[in-house]
Image 1 (tube, rainbow, N blue to C red):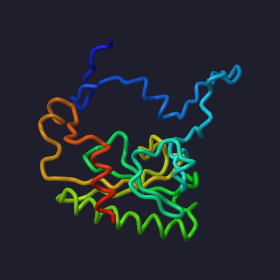
Image 2 (tube, helix red, strand yellow):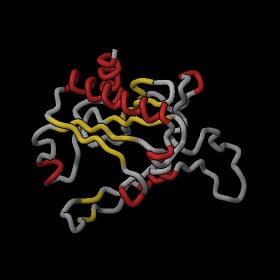
Image 3 (cartoon, rainbow, N blue to C red):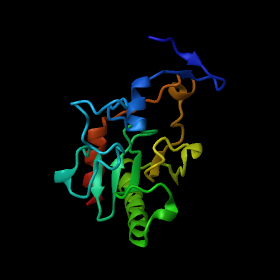
Image 4 (cartoon, one colour):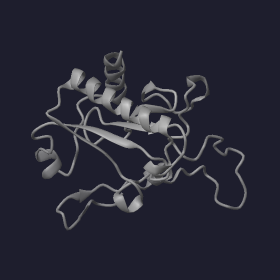
Length: 183
C-alpha cells in the first residue's frame, strides 16, 4: 500500500485506484474482445437506473423516480444527505434537456430541498451543476445536479486536519429517511 501523499493544499491523499473503474464506467473489456463475464449493464452508472424499478440494476440509493428524471443519493457524498437530481436520458449539457425534463429536474430539486430540510435541518445548501470535466464533473457525460446540505462547521478538524470526511449514517438509512419524508 502506498503511503499518503500530502499535496500543496496540505491534505493527505488516500489513493483509491479501484474507483477509476466506476468513474470511467469500465465493463472489463480490454479492447481485444469482450470477456465472457462482461457486464451487460450500460457503461454509465446513471443510465443503469431506469424509470421502471423492475429493469433497474443499480437503484438501491434511488430516493424517488419521476417520469423523465429521478433523485439518487451520491455514493461518495460530500455531506450526509447529498443528493443528485438527473434525467434518465443520457445528456451532458443543460441545454440538451427538453422542456419536460427541465421542469421535472427543477421540481425534484425543490422537493429534495424540502425533504432534506424535514429530515436533517441543514443550515444551508449547495445546489449546482458541473457541466464538463474541467468544471469538476467526474461523470460529466450524464448531467446531474447536486443538492448538498451544509451545516456551520461541517468542514471540521477531521476534514481540515485529518483530510477525512466523516459521515454519521449509512447511505441506506439516509435513503430511507429521505424517501419517507418525500411523501
